[in-house]
Image 1 (cartoon, rainbow, N blue to C red):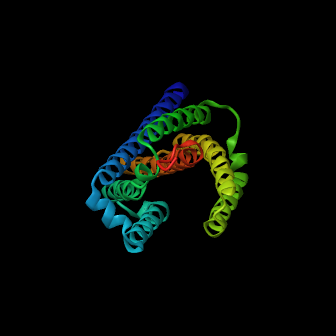
Image 2: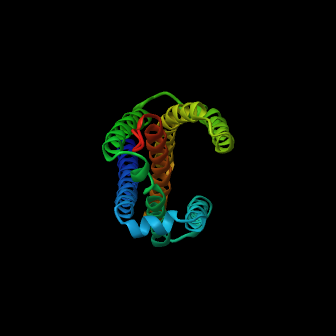
Image 3: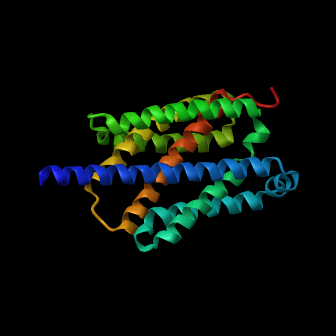
Length: 231
């Protein structure tokens, strides 16, 4: 009986994690596809980046979608939650179209592969390690706050050296967060015994968390090592 219960929990945990990664990859595919389409459509690029209003609208929409998925997920139905996640992925694609203007396509592709490799290795480490990564939580949060403050300050200072330091720290921070969040999702999966819809919404939340880890890892890495078109 104990073996059966343990087997059921393992199966449930694996199924949830498969769904997490599945939704994450769907979100990334939507983001990449929309970013590339907009970047190769002059009319859309001109509309989005011709003034501050479209970008401000996208940023406000993204913040609202993350808040809705993070704070109100238990109250949302699964179809609504899934739609919000996909919509967020699409808006991220619209804002990330600018990287195709700033960086060469080859450096974007290479950086994506490197980021995917780093993400995969650290996520696997977070899943399989016996070390308790939850102890890093408070330190990672403080580091994230410090990074955001540094980015805000550098918006006015506009220091190239500081920008490189921020990007380097960002790569390290989101690499660590990938392992931490993966273990956290695994722990949730071990404790979760709920309905199909509940597991689906938890999978969406996990996918959003890892999606953000990967996107930030990729962007910081691209800013740190990517080849700009003006170079």
